[in-house]
Every structure is written in C-alpha cells, then in structure tokens.
Length: 322
Ligand code: TXA
Ligand code: MG
Image (cartoon, rainbow, N blue to C red; front, side, top):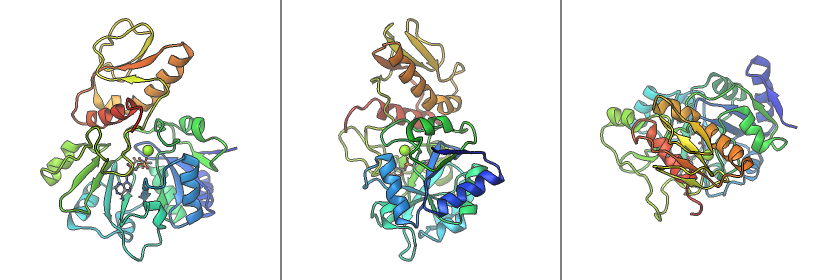
C-alpha cells in the first residue's frame, strides 16, 4: 500500500526519510505531481524508470530547493543565473552542462552531458526537497505515455502499491508541466512549452528559437516523444462539430450534440483551461468509455499564453504512434 501523507511537518519528515532510504515519493509541485527519487542513488533512479515504464533514453528533471543548490550540479551561464533569479522558484526548467563532480547518477540524465534542473514553487515540494537534503529527480507521477497527474488521486490511480508514498496537497495550481529551456547550446531554445509562457520568456530574454518538433521530425527534447498524455479513447483536435457518440472537451460555449461534455473554461480563459486540462482528459476518457463513446473531440484553444502548452499536450494526446 502506498502511504498517503499530509503536507504537514510529520508528512514532510516521513516523505523525506523515505526518499533518503531510496524509496519513491510523489509530491505536488505548482505544475503537476512529480514522482521523487534521490538523484544520487542509482537503485532509486532505476526504480523510478521501472515503475513509470519510462524509456532509459528519456532524461529526468532534477529538483532543488534553491538556485544556489541547483547551480552546484550544472554550469550556469550568465543568462541562466538571470533566469534563475527572475523565475525560480517557479515553472521553468533549465538544461545546462552537468558539472563533472556532481554526484547525480548519469542514468538520471540518460547519460547526456547536460542536466535539466528546476526549483519548484510549491511549499510542500520545497520543504520536502530541503528536508531530504538531496537533489530529487522527479518526472510527472504517471505511467510513461499517460496523462500527467494534477491530484494525489490521479497519482494513486496509476501507481498505488508501487510507490512508497504520496504527499497529498490537493490539486496543483498551474496544471501543465514546466517550460523546458535549453541553455547548453549557442542560443536559448524552448524544448517544451509549459507553465512559464513563451511571451514572458521572450519579453525577458528577447527573441529565441521556438523549437517545437514538427511531425516526423526527431524530437529535440529526448522525452518529447510524440505519443504522450494519451487517453485510451482517440482524440480529435480542432473540432468544429461533435457527434452524439463522442465526448467533447470544450473551450467556451460547448458545441451542441456531444454525448458527454467537460468544459475547460466557460470564460475562454487559458489559465483556467490549463489547470483543468489533465483532469478533463481523464474524466472524458473514463466516463466516455463507460458510456460506450468512441472518441474525444477537442474544441480549438488559442495559441497564446498557456494555450501553447495546452495545444502541445493535446497534439501529443492525439498522436497514436511515434
Ligand atoms: O513541471 C514539471 O516539469 C514536472 C514536475 C514534476 O516538476 N516534471 C516533468 O518531468 O514534467 P518529466 O520527466 O515528465 O518531463 C521532463 C522533460 C522531458 O521532456 C525530458 O526529455 C526533458 O524534460 N529533459 C530532461 N532532461 C533533459 C536534458 N538534459 N536535455 C533535454 N531535455 C531534457
Ligand atoms: Mg511527464
């Protein structure tokens, strides 16, 4: 049985002790729930890949409680230091060259010369990482390829009995994962749109290469596999109409005639939509299958602000193979 811990002093202490023993502990960040492991413990990292069914070539994000501790394991550029000061703690992940002396096990970074590092903003995550006093590898706490969890119940649906504990801090606030920015090359490259919007980043660092892999192109972020976030029902994007045997993921006034509806945001607000996205996909998938529906139709979402991250996740939810 997986322990469900409260995000209080006792729960954090228990979670940190389990992490230090090499166990897997899920916890809320401001984006999604992460599945934590001690990134300096090879057995713990191996268990993390095994439990998620994650391919070993997909590197993990390493979480820290401060930018100083993060930058002890990677070589920061001046821009990385500026970004860390401006946006950490927060939904930004930076890819930087790993330091040769870091105790983070190479398998956590899939053997790459770079490491992805982030300082999350959630108080329970920060307290847990500080108390564990270790770099914490934490992918989203879902089985690889499936929808990311935004509540402790979502985590347990996929991983109950297979991880030591989950710290239940209620629903996460942002709802989509962190923005992944690669600073290890010539110019900054956006590898994954996420919780920190491209507009805010651009305003801060000027124009940069918005790297979004096109269909058929090898993904630049090793983990940006096309098939991801996949519900079991097929997903149809940019729906202009909907059939009675389809579920509808609506944005604004729902199209008429669906067999089942989940509205991301009545008010057409992308921030609200991001926070509800993964719960909505899970609901339509489960309830839609129970009702015998044949697929999920998705209304268009604007490609601005968090809309870019929403569209990225939905596009991958709609892709059935690489
Ligand atoms: O919001 C988040 O980032 C959540 C929470 C738990 O912090 N974590 C998360 O981790 O989304 P995960 O493992 O589901 O996604 C990590 C992404 C993958 O696309 C992976 O390929 C990329 O970061 N990544 C990790 N290390 C990298 C590296 N060295 N170079 C390029 N991409 C990397
Ligand atoms: Mg993930």
